Length: 98
Image (cartoon, rainbow, N blue to C red; front, side, top):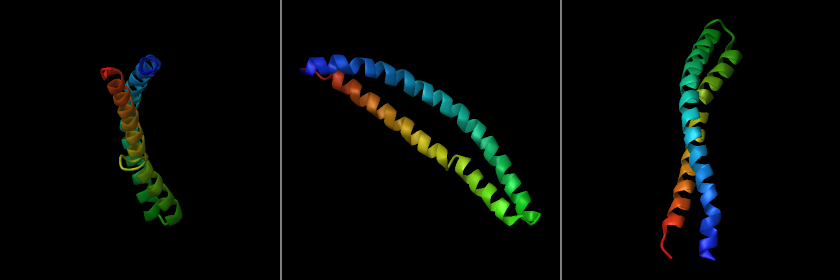
């Protein structure tokens, strides 16, 4: 029974390995773009607050925080790490001797 589960788990390992590598690659590019966008959005927020449009400035400041490296990208990084952990767990399951 255990060997059947190992055979079933093998394709999932291949898919998770490729998918997690692709997600890490895309995350690196997206993080770079979001850092740039966060900086510009932060500057727009400061300008809006200075010219007297405080609600708009606050909205832009919140958006800048969410797309900054300490906002939503942290959640994406955590999800990628969990996928990689799942992949490692499946690899350990297959490598265990009967």
